[in-house]
Picture 1 (cartoon, rainbow, N blue to C red):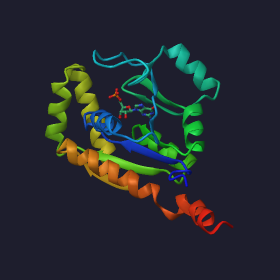
Picture 2: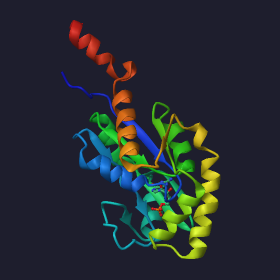
Picture 3: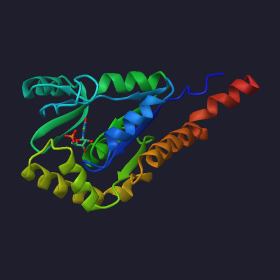
Picture 4: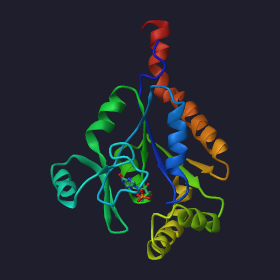
Length: 205
Ligand code: 5GP
């Protein structure tokens, strides 16, 4: 019998610098084939370590706006002057194939996804403190001081939405955060609402 016939949509939010990318890349290292990470489109500049098509699809504003007009973007936001958006087709296709699809998006986008997919599971990644968050943003040397300041302001606002999520994961130690996220996914996959088909397959009716 197939273990994961029903798809699961996980929305992962958390302030810039909370470690979403690191947690997800660790998760993906040892993930089963049922986990699929959605790759967003963005108009922001690529950071030196980022790979086009893996971290984001780096696109022009014109291209993004075309996709938006064509209805190919599930949700989008403008963050620090750049567009970010989730491609629609891959998400729906993966969910229909029973995948666990993870969207790494900010709080406004998460709200939109919740209204479109009420059964989705929201996870908020918490940094241990605002000081640590600021240090992490400064440490990666990809933004100037003004951009870091803006990201910290947005972070304070995003933290006010943390209680709207189903799960809060503290990222003070990477290994714990990754295993906590894995535990959430594992438990959510086994919710009765996603496994009802198993009962009829066992009883063959
Ligand atoms: P960054 O520039 O640090 O990669 O991303 C800035 C913020 O945009 C992060 O909070 C990130 O999770 C969010 N983000 C990335 N892709 C998307 C997307 O497709 N939609 C929305 N709403 N937010 C996104």
